[in-house]
Image (cartoon, rainbow, N blue to C red; front, side, top):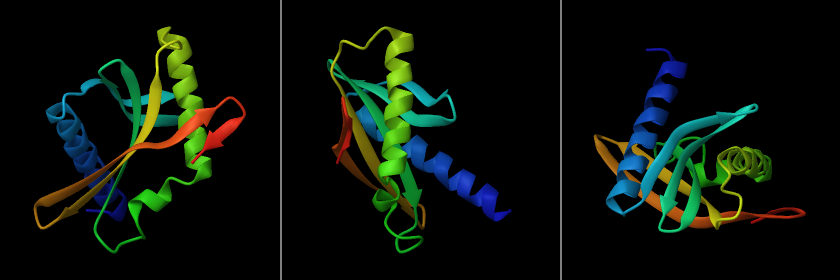
Amino acid sequence: MSPESKRQTMGRAGEDAAAAYLERAGYVILHRNYRAGRGEIDIVAKDGGTLVFVEVKSGRAGRYGDPLDRVDIHKQRQIARIASLYLAESGQDDIPCRFDVMDVRLSDGRCRILHLEDAFWMEDDGIES
């Protein structure tokens, strides 16, 4: 299997684990891999009355740094832009929303998940971390 295929397989497994975790926690998954413009949001979900945009970072412990560190300001802005498009297209721009990051570590058939709620937020003048 090529390195790209391995990354895609691990990414998909991480997103599957994250979605299952959210569902067990009572979230309703609205979309997976929502694409708009030049990017995507891994998971769009509802947590009660709040719309949640979730970025999932998958990896093995100790490889390529901490997955949470890979959601830099550039990635945050990209997610916020796509979320704005989603809100406009779905007519839900008047409901509360938040941005979560999930760190999914896969190793030896086991999965460890860290769910960081409100990891960053969108202000009228830009991104706040």
